[in-house]
Image (cartoon, rainbow, N blue to C red; front, side):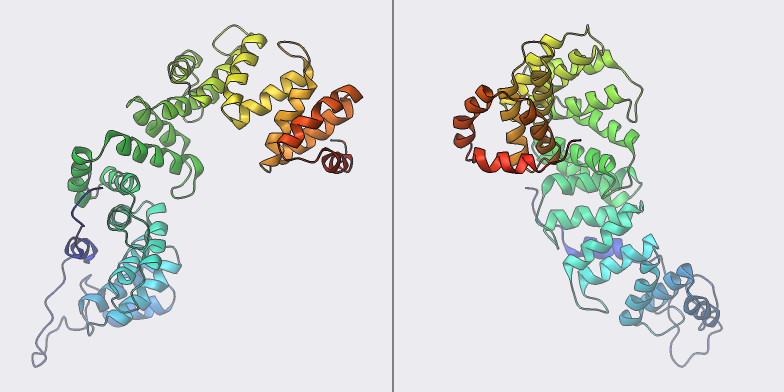
Length: 370
């Protein structure tokens, strides 16, 4: 873990609004006393804010925060930041997160601060990305996580936040390479799943590529499937096959599934069902769910070898036990095709899996034909 803890001074500096006008002394009548730091008449700004203008609400919040044109009031600043934040204003969301983090104008709540930083970061706010990096670094509202801290600092840096430069350099010089790679993979997954960041398959592929360049086998396979399916990158079956072949040398189950997938369909290699079945069997033996499903289908149909409904049934039973609904329907289909002798062969293996054959049979009988 990186040390020492990033202090609140650094956070405070990054949370400050732009430079503000110096508030006039109380006994001096100043023509700018009714104007905020953005040069707008405070009465008009309030009117716009009260009418629901999110940009005006943000400016009014900053005015109350700084005391520019109005008495300084963290409580009112927080209220107006919230109004703008709830309308989706990313800057206000980031600022509201800061208020919760420091307990300014409202009760301190680090979990709530992270929630608002996340909303703002998803909208592309580089400052919020930086603040999430700090949160995961310090454990403010989330568990300390060096790879996620690095991921958010890296995103903030690439989005133009200068405060992130030093943390990224520090992380890359002090953290283990595996932790840095995990951070790159986290960014790829964020873009791929479209949860913490908007879905962007091209960006996902770019970050998978950066992670794969470190030699990480999982990242190589993830990039390979991007290349196979042309997700965010042009299709390149030759490179995909090469990546999976290299990863499979480390007995990577996903890589073995990948090679089975390519062989079964003849993608970038000669179509070879027998070889596909061999690769699927290796991956299935390591518990790779997609390989288990593919192998079960091939064995039930006799593709690439002899028909083996017994093993196909057992593979699908393992998947069904893991709440795979598709596997349950496949089990029902195979059950109808089993001979009495094959069903008898399944009794002992099912019991060893702690599955009652008679109960399972009753369940399968109730599943309608697809």
